Picture 1 (cartoon, rainbow, N blue to C red):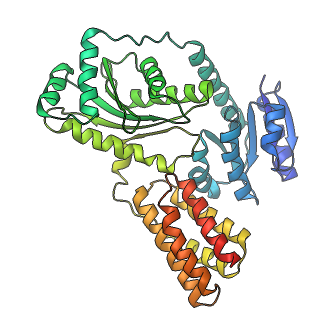
Picture 2 (cartoon, rainbow, N blue to C red):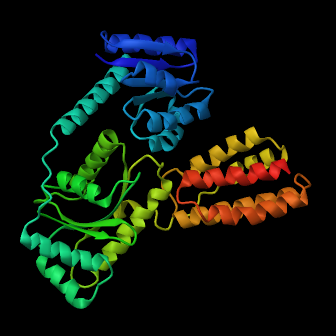
Picture 3 (cartoon, one colour):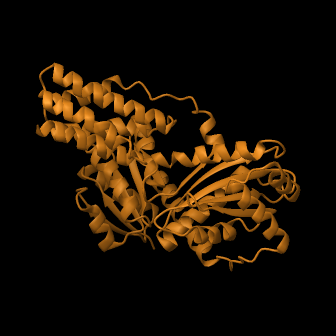
Length: 408
């Protein structure tokens, strides 16, 4: 029996959702609340299987709640009830918080039943995967040890012709993928290697190497038979889910397909894998990031979207010297920056730095900020932004700069 928490402020909509849940799952335990405040604390006390909320007048509060739930209570499945015209907004903003299901208005009991059934199936599959964890064999054969030594030499910088050719002779022909992985939350690379061995054990071959300088793990994977990117993606996502639920750890992985190994194929694949790995800039700190090079091809040349209205709203908030409005408009700005397709992280950094510089100078010219605040902010911003490795950290630095300027 599922336990379901319905957190919707609007009384009529909450009653409609509760009635639909009762029709869909008569035996479910249902709790109702009329506020979004302190929901994570309530969830930790009630321990529901599912949280159902709605995108109503408190949009930012709802989206913030989804982020909090992902970090504090990742085992709880979230469902958002929204209108058709709000679907794109919710999908772009909320999917970064992990798996979020959606139900469109007008509400139909069949839609609720379908979503709850899917959540139950997904939860059961995760439990079965956890129970069916294979014994991890970390003792490769002598031939594989030799190949892994060659890959280790290549990953550590010894990419001379003899090492390259020896590795290519050892590697089987056909479809191959090169992984560049990093374990998060202090997990040792050796532990990450165990997880990858367990979940990629059915590959034709799996060669692993450590790059000690940057604590990266390289893996050259040959999927069994005709299995390709879809199989590899599913395996990596399963490993990431198991790490997250079983060990409270995450990983970031960049993947490049290697079709033609001879020549510079391996070096080109390594560059693509590292580029994909850099897209953890957009990921939350406690969420695994798995990016394939093919995911980045469509937006490789994508620029920051045209955000004139959002920029003007942020400028108006600064001129009004209202920090709550500044926080609200900054949330809106970064929601657009986190939408798909995503520009390159370097372009986001340049855009944000240029935007804040121009905003402060413009506010100073218009008399909304004193000269000392403008001078301090324009000097402070580049130094702070240069230390950011994730999008949420960049957002925090923007708020720090603007808050300092408003206090002057």
